[in-house]
Length: 107
Length: 233
Image (cartoon, rainbow over all chains, first blue to last red; front, side):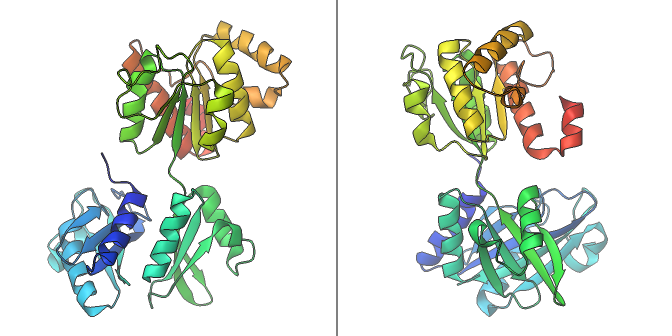
């Protein structure tokens, strides 16, 4: 069964209630061909467990790493990924698009 | 995001009410605007437009860059007729994220053996459909081929503004259905909303292939802008 948006956001709420640090990542802008539409969510807890997606799997690893930072600092971050950004992030979207992902702490 | 905002958003989603989360991406400041509160919001025009299109996106307002995340309810699929096509259609729709319910008063058809893992209601449409809260975020298909079951089901779908209504049957069958529904008080505009023959023309033969063509048509209706929809039909 696929994780749907409400399952993902419900998991974020449940994780937080269970005492976990939780971050929410959201695709806020896309240019060119992007694998997931604007508004897509990925939720991450302090154990590195994640649900949902912001790309077709191309950049989730990097987002999870950044999310762990956001969970400990509490400061939101804007991340940008694209083929031109390989040197900056060592990850890129193989489909050739660029996406901007907003990462925030829950709670 | 505040936990209270997240809990509120999850509650709106559980109740199948649309809501929009407004985030100032510079500061992280946030507020949740429920559908009922959009009209009196300072951003009402932008919010209403985004909700209508079902599209999230960035807007600029009062020198701030705001991200509007539109959370529309999960689409439902109501299948009237626990027939062979429905056995293929239900799991495909589930894999696409739809909440699926199958309705058929004929208990020989509506059996758990034929429909494992799908909510099944073995009642006539007048009993089965009202509690399902069929709404705008619902796709509705009538597949029994039996007017006694399909007709009242379609009349119910007309009254609930379903985003997709489809009915199985040839053009000839549909012409007869048109006359029957007219006689029962449906308008021509209501009847014109029925996709019949049901499904995209992909040369489907087997029940599973017909299920794919139905699900493709529902997806096109949900996602394509109106003009491209006409070309796909």
